[in-house]
Image (cartoon, helix red, strand yellow):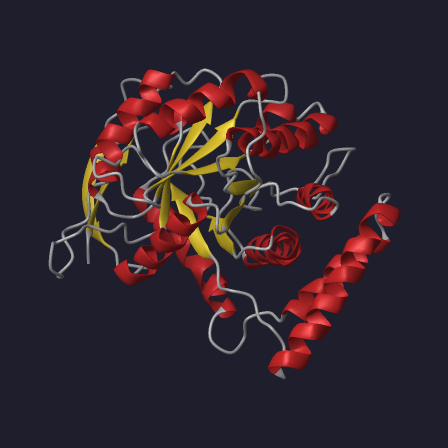
Length: 373
């Protein structure tokens, strides 16, 4: 059981207390290694990462209804995108843990551990004999389409999925089921490196999440500076890349976190905004490619377009088109926790829009041949 080092600050001049708490591992190394293998396939353009944001309200601990809604949206999106893109979808559910001091203090390791435990209890219900059937999830999608203002555009897609599911059932003689999601968590400033696993090579694995995310805000500096723990663990590591992130910072991060250039180790989640992605993404993709790192490129179009609903669709569409033009792979998408209230597009709005566009062409938006110019 790895020891957690706790640092609880209460503001300037406040006393910092340090304690060690033994917490049982929630993730076994083989599970994280399996996700890393699937992300390596996504880096080659032969799978697609679908990362679902936490539906837990800010400042709250996850509850069953929050996680259930998150997993349901993830399942609905899996069915649509796996059909539209023609490749396996790699589902990952984000873990949210609240800050400890009136939403302003740091998230402590035990809080992240508790949040992960709540999420994993329901995620693992997707395993063994109780994983959701694709046909049941498809019924939810048909209900969504029936109430959508874009019903006329989306119904042909649901009809084609109907036919595909009937064919699969006829061939297999049993209903298809969805894969079980993995979970991701944000890196914490005080994360200690877990002890080496008792296996040949002595790899270290994060015991709380299959995947660990780095964001400039998690470092306390606004820069992409990974903690020592993130550099030492063998789990897949996701990195949020924003418009202000420099190319030098990204390249330095690759050298530190992926010196052996191992496929599936790194995922870059871009948050550029619809107005900046065309200017920023191509050069960054080319510079990363020059390092020979095999990364997954994913898009999060929500944070920079909150006041521009059309911008969400525009950024996601540009992300796919730019990779197509570059001859590289658009490998993933982040889904928001909200349902599109107050005129904002929700997760399923974006998924159906992208899937309808993809199935309306003869090529996949992920793997089409590069275009001239």
